[in-house]
Length: 196
Image 1 (cartoon, one colour):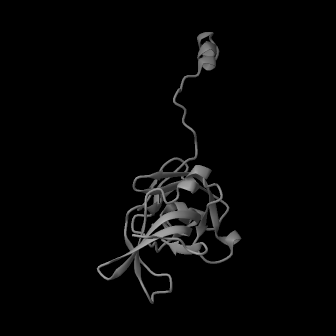
Image 2 (image 1 turned 120 degrees about the vertical axis):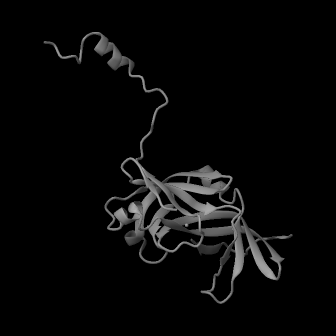
């Protein structure tokens, strides 16, 4: 199976379970791109279709760089300023796909919909740098090997069945050590206790 390298970056737009709210809910975490999942897709508005699958580590370069340039948008089309819903605060690859976390911009008119269940499905826009193609049972199958994530779009109609918000949570850091030695010392010295 030969590797096909495109002349220039191919820009693709693809689409992503109900979420479980926790914390303040203004940070959403979800599966942006499932790996090894085959989907029927079209790049020409429905005239021709092929099977597409993103391979593990397809977004490895983005993960290594942190993905801070990736934004959560409302859909794929329109003015970026009007569509901006939040910024990427975390990006990790797991065996089953690329996971991203976004801090929602509370000032956006659709921010509540993006975290409350109306726009819990995700779609992605990515640049494809390397793909491998094969024909199986007369159908073209394209395996995406190296890609760059442009943005994630909150949408009601995802391309990939499993992609979307998994949890809405507060963006806080929980420490491993909950001890408070200075406060404990003050309490031991009698501070913070009511004196009768």
